[in-house]
Length: 415
Image 1: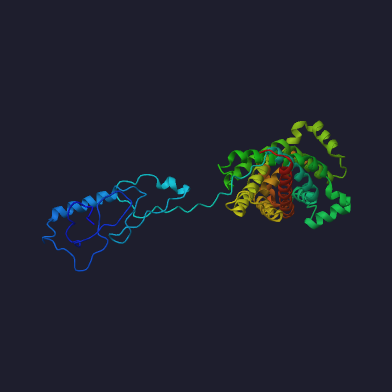
Image 2: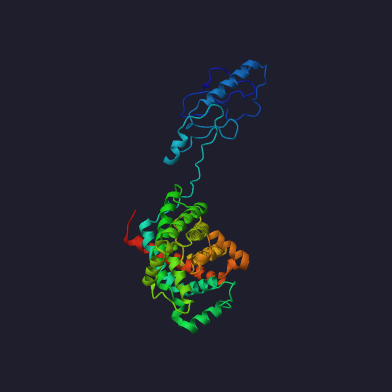
């Protein structure tokens, strides 16, 4: 068989070499392997080429190799040997391998298939604000009926000023004296005001939080802890202005009224009517500044902790279901963080809403007088009963809220 190359082979290659058969278009042929004893030395009659001719031939072979299409045969890592074309790539990789090779070096191997990335878990499902309002109201009503006695004891201890002879020696003594003087029902004095207020309070809180958080989430529907803090702050301010301040004012006045020899408030509506008649509508907004500061920081801390813990638990799957027990633990931790973070504001708020609030010129004057006459520890009065109440409160609320939302998602389609 005659060589396909029209000129003699370059020097240094064996005499009598034969090209490989190929289905590709004709091009420069190369020896497959050298035969021992047949090498040609430069300058011999069989190799008339000089140094310039050898360089020109080498450049021509390299140019031809670079001009081959990407799906043609490629030289392997073994010198001067050829292998068959690789099998056609799958459809997913066809687009990647169909592009023309870049100028310069062309890889002698077929382009490897990229490892497929893990399939995303999908976009996080958002909670409709309407569902949040309904679920929050139900959760708030159930929670306050369970935890009100701890709120009663906490408020009584915060109203017990050191400037006067202390009425209670501690938590146990407060419970004992209340039960002795008013029976078990005495621990639920003022419950009606909180029941009427807790339902709209929790409804406004969760509704506003979901409304704000839905506008703060990223493209995947994920809410980070910082944005959770901001959404919680907005929810706390909203509930403070709309519900909490008037509700807390009436509650504190009811509880404080019980300490007087002749209580004048006979019930929720009677108390509200008397407060509005004597002090006007403004009377239900005593301590608004302290309430806004307290509720805003309260919900900011709670939702910040809850968002951080939920994101940590769910990992890369934003739609992962959380066990109610785990939700309760997360809620208790969030409640504890809020107690230690803003109990001083809660004490100031309680004093500003009591029956003796007239002796304080402002929220800051109240804080100044507490520090001056009672010392810094007075800002943490009622911390232990509040800690038990708030941890239980937040845990119950988040458990009930999540379960009610799950039930509403089955019957109320908002997607």
